[in-house]
Image (cartoon, rainbow, N blue to C red; front, top):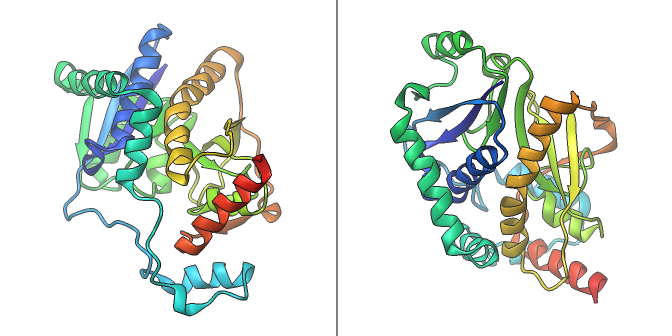
Amino acid sequence: MKLALILSDYSVNQLKYISAGGILLELFNRDLDCEIFIVMKKSVTPPFYYQWGKNIQKKLLTLLARFEELSFSRLTEEKTVTPEKIFASFNKYIGEEKINHSYDTISKYIEDYPQRIITTTDLQSQNFLQKINSLELDIGIARGGGILRKKFIDAFKLGILNLHGSGPLPYYRGSGAVEFALIDGKKIHMNIHYIDPGIDTGSILSQKQLLLNGKETLSDIYAKIYADGMQTIVDTIEAIIFKNLTGQLQKLKNGRQHFLPHPLFEKLALTHLNNKMN
């Protein structure tokens, strides 16, 4: 079995890079008979961070469709979730020692196996796709790389796995799916699915409920998705290898795509969680 971790160079020192190291550790600990490659997408320009105020029309359409009483005077509220806060929660949740071990594991792997590291600035370039196709990879694990296109996805015999933390798929797709699931009173799940050209629309492989006590911040919830998701991803890979696990098609008409929520709804999501658990 040939696996590939898909990363972006701007994810170095960030959670997706560390979680990729945790996945690598978990694969090593289970002694799975896998040859592991790393596909690194190098950025030509600084990465674009999705912020409130960008692409505002789509966001407002989503918000207004669900909350017609939205006050435009509150669009400047500060976000309660930031990468720094998520990382602090992640550190608290799994500990600095494991974070360092995960980081060191993937960094050393990149140094020790340069022949298994494939870098590119363009996942769609002909030369890169020829290289990927020649490797005959079975499974990809997306921990970066941005939106993946069909030609790249099709280079993997079985497909590329994605961890989507949200309410249960197919009901909560896209960004903000955690917040809107909490507002709707739904349980948060770690959804592992194959990637297709849509947004979180690929076949579902596994769904595991995230255990919460109602006292978490949103940053805590996102950190738990990253931390617990490492093992869930490897559990799914193991089931594919040994149990011939196949994906279940989503009934897309049953769900909807969400967009990054305004801070007003981040706070509303926590209020709903705390009220439900207490």
